[in-house]
Amino acid sequence: MISVSELFLQRVEQHLHIIYEGVELPLSVTELAQQLIKIILGSNALRDPTPHTNRWDEQDIVLIAYGDSIIKHDDSEFAVSSPIEAPLKTLHRFIKEQCDMQLNALHILPFYPYSSDEGFAVMNYVQVNESLGDWGDIQNIAKDVKLMADLVINHCSSRSVWFENFLNDLHPGKDYFKTASLTDDLSQVVRPRTSSLLNTVTTPSGEKHVWCTFSHDQVDFDFGNPDVLKEFVGIIRHYLDNGVRLFRLDAVAFLWKQLNTSCINLPQTHEAVRLMRTLIEHAEPSVVIITETNIPNQENLSYFGNANEAHSIYNFALPPLLLHTLLSGDSAALKHWMMSMPPAQNGTAYFNFIASHDGIGLRPIEGLLQPSEVASLVSTTMQFGGRVSMRTSNDGTHTPYELNIALFDAMQGTHNGPDKFGLERFMCAHAIMFALEGIPGLYIHSLLGTTNDYERFENSQHNRAINRHRWQESKLLAAISEKYSHHHKVFNGIKGLLAVRKKQGAFHPNATQFTLHLAGGLFGFWRQSIDRRQSIFCVYNISDKPQTLTLADLNLINTQKWFDLVADKTIEESQLTIELEPYQSVWLSNIK
Image (tube, rainbow, N blue to C red):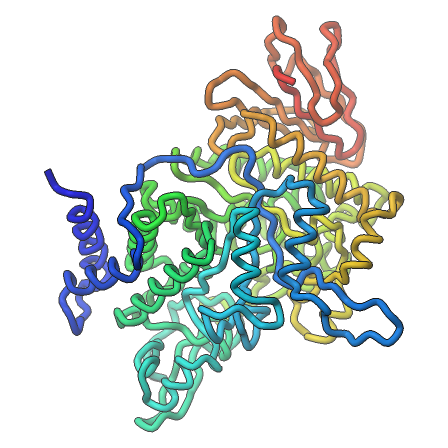
């Protein structure tokens, strides 16, 4: 019988044969596979992973935050503006003391030294930005929550040592970066930005044109060089050693470049994700790989592979579809999308979110919303104080790429303008997201009800800065303690919803989900626990008018008692309808 180690080597070799087909390597595939296995295992024993195993349950909620989203200042009259405590310590304390442990996982956005893009132009992958703390702080956080970290795999900073070496024809780095000729036909390349794709630089061996998918400060790696792959496997090992258990593969869709193609979602990219999964799960089977691919929905789904690529994918279509639903009062597009989404196989799960450090992407709804509906989203975002970022299409035109706005401000009204239901609309959005099939990801500024940060935007002139506020700890604690403030209402309301969610087997990320067909301004879906004991009918008024839910439309089993988990109320046997106020949510369960 073939041993685990022999099978492991064979699988790694198979991945490498596919990735490097047609590429002349300086060593054999077997030698490269052996080197990668040695790097990923380090001094640790080889593990035998169990396929199709769910590494999550209804208890899992991921908080998304920058390492300095909350900073502690000296509030005295003569205080300087810099923090008096490592921000990672401040964030850790906030989660432990204020969040009542309702959040059991934390995604700390890039905490490495960087030169731009709020951390996504990494200068050194194995250092912690000293302005945030150190690896000891990271390790301490990882003891209390599941730690998620970014593997910024497509590019690094133009100020990194690797790129400095590239500019000087030195190793390591001399041949780490993708280059092209100005005469190459790059017209098919899919672009997420408006900047030019190639940046011209001078090296001792002559002028070169480096590939920059996102900005000229973010230079793309050349994974055709296996030394780049080995560097990243070493980085993964370092993160594992420091407690990281969820890996977010940032912008991974662009990883492999090949002339005369779109240079996105190429077969080599998918095989590279499969390779990383094989390597990681043989080193630490509990790890979860999440792909961040802000692309049209069907392309995004492809990163599940055959349950052998990402364990989880960002559900990028959800934020713009849910925003459209609540601003328009029309759930048709959301329902159509939900019915078309395949249930995630065991061992895979959707990663649901409705706000993040980036904007609300519009590429994922290509083909899901009409151009007029997208135009309405853009117009209302601008009306509510937001910004719109653009990208260059293949025909050279600039088209909207993402909406940049704090979610609380985005929900302040409808397409008709601001109204009095902003808080209710915002909470309804989260009640929908928390109940959907998948793992919820909660952006810290949604948890806190943070509004648009115009000062940060003006200072940086970067659209995304509007939704990346940095709270002073004392001001934050005062805001969430003031019972009449919207911060207090949002913070405690979301914690209350999460406390309920975590007790329901029907909210397991892989529990059954069916979309309901309800009349008027109602939207709903049914969840059933994996053991089939619990059913929850999740119904929402997505309009600014009261709506009547006829319980007969849900086909409730009348031999059972039913409970509204949100309102903590029992549904009377004689009750025929439920009146829902604007944006009210009900979770009707047969188990309390």
